[in-house]
Structures are given as structure tokens and as C-alpha cells.
Length: 201
Image (cartoon, rainbow, N blue to C red):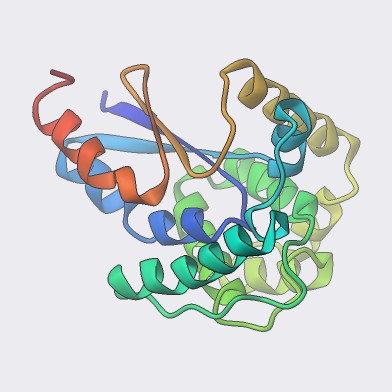
């Protein structure tokens, strides 16, 4: 059985968006699978006393806004900073957890689809009706996905997921764990690849 790489992310993270588009290809190259771990950066930031990159002092926020575009273009991806930004993504994360229950092999497709839509939008990323449309477009049950947004089971599952992220010391996204080695940020993918190619050496 192939070993997995944990990919912790929030759908609102530009850097996670960049990494989502290639992480499965990288994992497959080294006979790994991706364990998708949606979480909420708001919960993580609350635990660390941090804040969204675009809500930091102007000199920092302006840099990151520019870097989002530059990093996406470097990866060959389109990018438009959504307005407003950032937004809450609890419904999107709950639908992702629901999908992992009913069709886990399609999780990567969903994550890539909705993050790309959000960062080339505008789209209503966290809207249950919009999420239902995305699921329906995949040939799956959009109504069931929409219902998952208010399902106590998935509310609790997401809460537990965020608690696990905090317990692991995660403070940003994407956060990638391979063989218990943590890599923060899409710009660490080359380091991750070297780690995988050398079997963690």
C-alpha cells in the first residue's frame, strides 16, 4: 500500500491553491498518495496569535498581494485576488470532508476545481448552493453536498480537524507532512521532492 503525504490546507489560501494543482502528480511520481486535510486558517491563527497575510501592516500586505500573483505565474497558473479577501471557508471544508466519505478518490479533483475557480473568479466559494453546483458538475449528489454544510456530523468533523492541525503545530498553509517531516508553503515543493527522492535522507 502506497504511503501518503498529508496536505493540510484552507481553500482560501493562495499558496495552497498553487500547491493543490501539482501535489498529486508529485506524490504519484514517488509512489505516494495525498491525504487531503482541509482546515480553517482562522482557527490556526487564533491559536498562534497570527493573522491573514493581507491583514498585516501595509508594507507586508502589499508584498504578499504581489507575491501571490508572481508565485502563481511562476507555477504557470492564472491568478486573480478575490474581493473580498479573505473569507470564511467552513462550508467548502465540510463539503470536502463529506466527499472524502462518499467518493474519496475524487477529493483531489474537487479541491483543484474549486480553488482554481476561486482564484480566477469571482465565485461564491463558501456558498452551499455554489458548492452543490460544483459537486453536481462532477456527476455526484449536489443536494447531499449542500446538506453537509449544516450537518452536525461534518461541523464536528471540521472542528476536530482544526484541533488536530493545532495539535500538530501547524501555523500556515499549505502544510505538507511526509514521513513526519513538515514543509510549509508551495515554495517548499522542491525540498519535498528531494526528501521523497532520497527516502527521507
